[in-house]
Length: 154
Image (cartoon, rainbow, N blue to C red; front, side, top):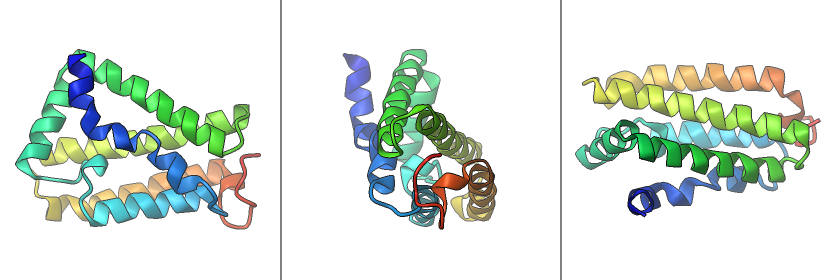
């Protein structure tokens, strides 16, 4: 489909969270570090990227209802892959849903600011602080996925 032709550009990110968490002693800590590293290198998946082609892609993605719907399907698969790595039970699915939602909202907020004309250099500090707060909130609610907890959803 036409949507598939557009979304192939981000298809490799579908199981990214699962790949990062797999085998990590503290999956949430690994995901936090990975997201922060993405902000540092301006990975387009974090929304913190002002390359014209990336901005155009995100405008197309977020501005086309059929693509937004397809992206949500992709996010559901991302949640399922992460949940499987976290143990596959209800608690793991709930944790995965929260983690993927946090990453999505952070990226969308970053993209909106960049698309609104702010410079990456001016947004980066806020983006890092927001990510730190968001992952701290996740850690408070998902202590079984942080350092010292054995890395499994409880």
